[in-house]
Amino acid sequence: MSDRALVVVRAGALTTVQDRGRPGYAHLGVPRSGALDAPAAALVNRLVGNPPDAAVLETTLNGCAVRPRSTVTVAVGGAPCPVAVGGRPVAWGAPVVVPAGALLEVGAATAGVRSYLAVGGGVAVEPVLGSRATDLLSGLGPAPLTDGMVLPLGAPAGPAARVDGVPQPGPPAELVLRVVPGPRDDWFTARAFRDLATRAYRVSAASNRIGLRTEGPALERARPGELPSEGMVLGAVQVPPDGRPVVFLADHPTTGGYPVIAVVRAADLPAAAQALPGTPVRFVPVRRR
Image (cartoon, rainbow, N blue to C red; front, side, top):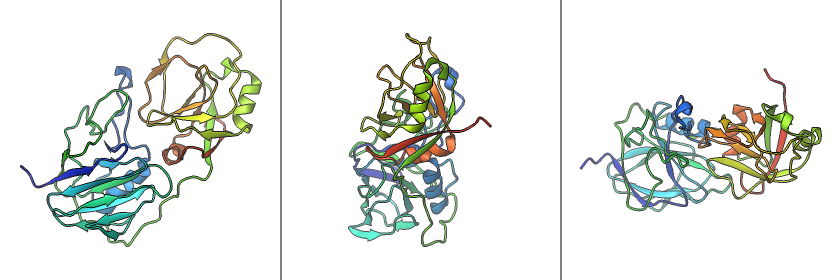
């Protein structure tokens, strides 16, 4: 049995293996998946000397704890949280050496939702369609972590970064999402789009990796019924029968029949990964490029 491995001691509320996902398979009904806060995942990979496509662990709210079988270099980023090795606090947002057999604890997020743990060499579970990402909608990739699971690690690709810490954006106090109207904005009244752009919404506790659900005024339809299923893209703002907008995230379905009133700019989606339930949401219409 290889000593290049992590033993999961505490899996946490939801911890998954994520990388940059598996783009290019939407025609087969396979979502892209991948890290919701992609810049945070890329940064922790850089800190431990991994390539940007190496697989990391994505935690949700209350972190996780793992024990490496050999000495490894790790970095934790994304949502700020306490980090400890062998019961002693260590740096967040910087490379840290964890001795073989020591307990690495990624604590509960003090702000935001999702923290990212990179290990030198990356998590080397078997890839599916070119990616090691866990897809909660399709079930592709490794299952979410459970206590006692053993995760293989790859060989270190390069030296850790020589930094004491790097700046990272904080979780949003207000989630500002720039949206391009359409493709089905004609299914809604002029008042609906005005409400979307001016009324107060908040992140719903029902949000997950599939979509960010909102609480707020229902958007008024201009026509009844539903569309035949059509393709859905990352960032699509779909409006189900209750009228509350849902922003599609990495594990979103590739088709759907509810109309899409707008699409969020890709650059704004990482912040959505860190928006706690109750966070105010503001949709800002912008022109198509």
